[in-house]
Image 1: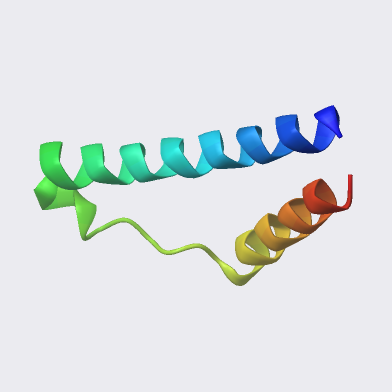
Image 2 (image 1 turned 180 degrees about the vertical axis):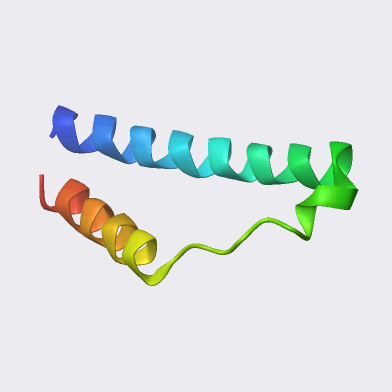
Amino acid sequence: TQAEVEFQKADSDLDYIQYRLEYEIKTNHPDTASKLSPLTKEEKTATEQLKSFMSDL
């Protein structure tokens, strides 16, 4: 359906934005890139729940 296509595009857009942000941080701020903390368990869980919810729509 059209809604599924739109959600897939939005998910793809978010993945691209995340990639670009990580790239920009690594290339423009290499001294602080290694200091970034990884996602917490709660953040990972929330991310997976959101992705699951989006795929169910």
